[in-house]
Amino acid sequence: METIKTPFPRLAAGIVIGFGLMIMGFLTTGALLVPLKVMAIAPNGYASSYGLVAGVSAIFALIGNPIGGAISDRSTVAFGRRRLWILLGSLIGSLCIMFILFSKTILGVVIGWSAAQFFFNFTWAAYTALIPDQVEESKRGTMSGIFGIIMPAFMTVGMILINVIVHATDAVKFTTFACISIIGPIISLFIIKEGKVEFVKKSDNISFGKKISKVFPSPKKYPEFTWALFSKFLLMMGYCSMFYITVMLGGRMHMDPAQITSTYSIIMILGFAFTIITSLLGGILSDKIRKQKIFLYISTVIITIGILMFIIPNVKVFFIAAIVLNIGGGCFMAVDTAMVARVLPNKEDTAKDFGLMNVANCLPQSIVPAIGPLLLFIGGWNFFYIFLAIMPIIGIFTIMPIPEVGHKLKSEREAETNILAGTVVETE
Image (cartoon, rainbow, N blue to C red):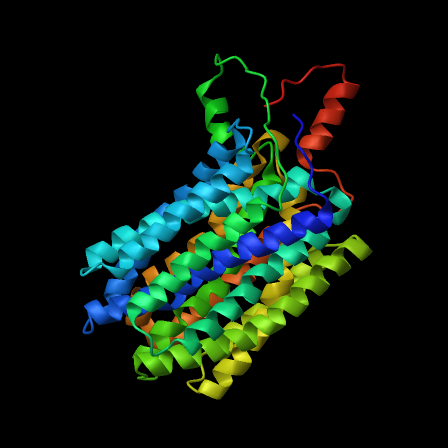
């Protein structure tokens, strides 16, 4: 299976512009515009209503990325399988943002945001798959570092922009970010090269178990992939405490929407600035010393400390907590992306498998707001942050079984053993 390769600098530029602007439009909408829309529709019960919106949309985030990845993997068009879904996913997603603008009920917001989550994840999966598709292994850490700074960098710009237009109408805000989320991907299509990929048709006479493994790789055969999935999910469960700050500032600090927008923007800008630095450094250093796990362990501890600092009900402390949390988060996400690219089970299913990893990355962004009301009911804000701080610590134990760079994966060791034994193993 061959694909047209884009030169590294050009590929990096295309991903930064396209994925960055898509993320800016998509996640800024989710972080601020959606919860504020819920507050406007249901001012007396917005925490529960937002939990409903986030919980339902989480299901669509869960299925959107792997489905989008699998469809992308099997698309055979001259336009390019990744480029096709970069365009369609972001186009439909931007229309869904506009649907939310005109929604008058919580149900309308649920439908609009669920659909947006689903289709933007098609685009997310396609962009992520370009790393194993077109980047040689020796540069994947660097590319992963670049990829890791895209979200914080463009979210920072999004926070600045939303703060500039804080007094604008909802129509202006939603339209602005809907346009941004489609303009970037369109520009990237003129930069990223990709051709048609031909596939050799395989026999459909396979067992049900193998069909299931095509959806989710066998944990027994590819345990490293499964452990990496759990580690990313647990880390992001803690990190995504950041995405509940909007509700926290309203419910705990009793701020009005304008104050929430301004304070949240500053918190995120400060935090993301440090994410950019540590993401780049983490990715490059992990390539240089050929080690990944030590960066992940240290990052996890730093993230946990940052989460626990949010227990103190002081806005100045929130600023410091965001910086600490994002120092760890930036390094983790850069190095973790490189590690995931290393443990992918099947090169023919890269987008689908990366899509599963992106579920672990994105799903907590919806789960945390969904379970937030329950955690607050059980023990208030202190319990909320302590519970989420425990998640990354558990994640350390899921990183431990993953082999370090230079060590063979279980599937590779078994393949060598079978070759030495003179047997032929059917590949999936």
